[in-house]
Length: 464
Image 1 (cartoon, helix red, strand yellow):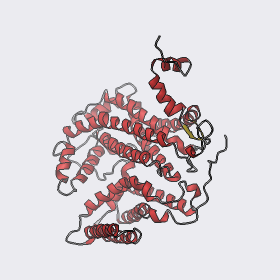
Image 2 (cartoon, rainbow, N blue to C red):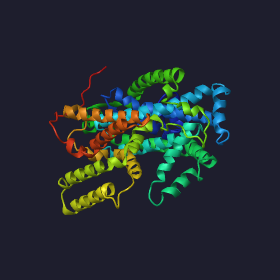
Image 3 (tube, rainbow, N blue to C red):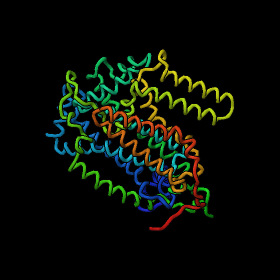
Image 4 (tube, helix red, strand yellow):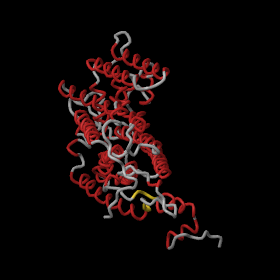
């Protein structure tokens, strides 16, 4: 009959006989992929993120069937979905709550990577693909936030797009290009709708495929930070690994079940989450002539927004001092006169732009720069961390304390970003900002300090 000899029975065997390339992918990335035996609950979040993406794609497709990307109709089409479309309120809340849960899951996923050093060699490309995916998720959320055409989404988009205008030379033209017009209107709404529903989802799916392929090429990290491919059995399989399917598919289904309990509890009983997931001002149609009293972005952008807002003219001398101190520390650490010359020149330039009157950059532009750096600095993590071990389990206790202080500072920045600014909040935000950047900037030094515990040769695993 010309059929391929199947490796499976039943339905899988029927598919394998007719399309073996599909089953090759299944064999390589699921059934034949060996993952470490000692995964814990922190490893649920990768699979949960994939489930949330599916929820967003499906619910978004149903919303797009009734949504009108027209500035006169957009707000009322959302109201129609909520009030007239059968089950429309559920689909809309699943989508809006799903957006917030997507970021919660991704933040936990990033935290786990920082806890166990999952960005370290040989997983730099896995990490970089994940960081690009995080940026794509932020862009996807930003484009989607304008679509309800409520007061907060309109003015939030106005504030974010205006930030680009502070970039020297190209800023004003870039802002106009993003809007597609001189003001936010139909052109902006149409291009944001296209980007949110077609372009960015396609990009994200491609990045997820790249992220998973890169991961499966080098293998998964684990809580001990041990490379399981270094200990192979006679059959060439890792001694400390087990096939992803069926062991971790069942394991992940268990975690996904808990996720659905929490997710649907929020969808049915607190979809607005007290104005955090859905702001009250977004239930008012966008009015370009009336600015809301307090404009704040969605909660998952607020840590970075607070960094932008807390960078004031009074803060620039402190910034200059920090740049000088970091430059001096780097200068006396690196070797080679060319590298030292480069560090000295870069430090002098940054110090001048922060403090010298004639060439000082505007505080708003510094805010934009620091906000961009606060996100993109994640890319450098594999090269900033110089610890001799990967996992926090075998690092000095104070390393874990530093990590939790960093997380606390990040949460405080996020909270203040949702509040109206005042001098005290601004001062605390600047302090937390110093912790945030200090954690990364000083990592090449602090990550090597202290007494490390000896890491085991094999993963620690107790059957459960």
